[in-house]
Length: 247
Image 1 (cartoon, rainbow, N blue to C red):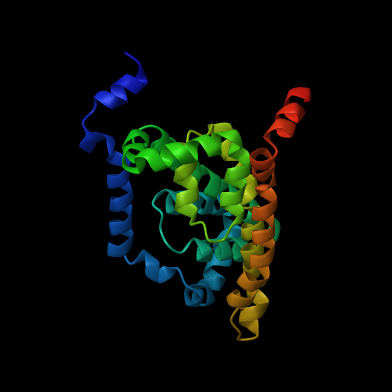
Image 2: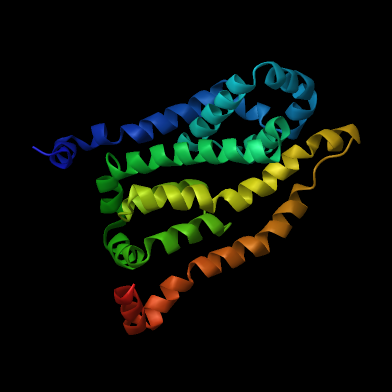
């Protein structure tokens, strides 16, 4: 009997174990007051202790940061923005960006695999005909769609992590578009974190609204550009097929 058959044979309550895990993580985070620590004020108060720890335990600090970011992505915890800013504050622009991309991609990959296996059939059943119609369009240009999901600010990160699995994306394509697609946003907020030291020294707060406003037009433009192959195939299918056959 195949793995797929084994999965289908399991009762629905057993196949929903990833949802129980996510819910448990959210409840635990709330119970321990973890959300209270995800703030600018926490960084301001703990900046000396955090930087001292990083200086004395750089490898451990990077590993811990990646683990925290992975867990926050898997459990869909709010506050990823503050974790990203903290990465820039602790490791600088280059180090913070790399660590965040690794952590976010690992967490997104775990969600993808959970949705692909245990949750996939259940979610497709809920979405029914709508998901099937979208799946056909998606599979014509999967990477273009996934890049657009990452670039467009209105697309929630958890949705962009799970939806491709339901629509039948390959993990390789998913991992590539995730790792590359989140870079613009990660760089923007890591940059804010990298400059927090001087901002705190002046007794000021970073202007996150301004950062988002400056990032929004570029993100929308990237989303539009990523969907151009989809539009080309939609309106000029014959030419698109000729180009693909020639390639």
